[in-house]
Image (cartoon, rainbow, N blue to C red; front, top):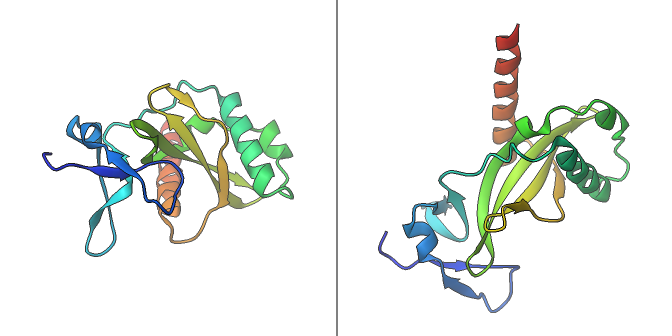
Length: 168
């Protein structure tokens, strides 16, 4: 990759501030995230070639992130049964996309899927690539039919069903 890659960072601002992110792409760590028709490389998000698995994160840590995110946005959702019967949440995480929080500070975003009272929620977790840790805060949203999140969720459900069938 020889062309200069200019990427946005941080929260959106009217100044549309970008920095030279070429090194992150030329190293092979990230590749452009193509969007739109005709497809063009996003100046805001990108895709990691080998995302981290996050399998080393304790299930209780993930549970806390999920509960805080869901209770913050959906305070009326009953989470008691989920707390008492928490599944292995690490198996329900999928890499989504990456962006820069600051120049040369990539953050990988992951979707964690949970079903509560027959409704599925997507909790977005952010991973600080350089510090190798989850960032504070997480965002929850209700799963929308036909969304990219639903496609990823269906893949997770399929993988979990195959794993359960293989154990029988």
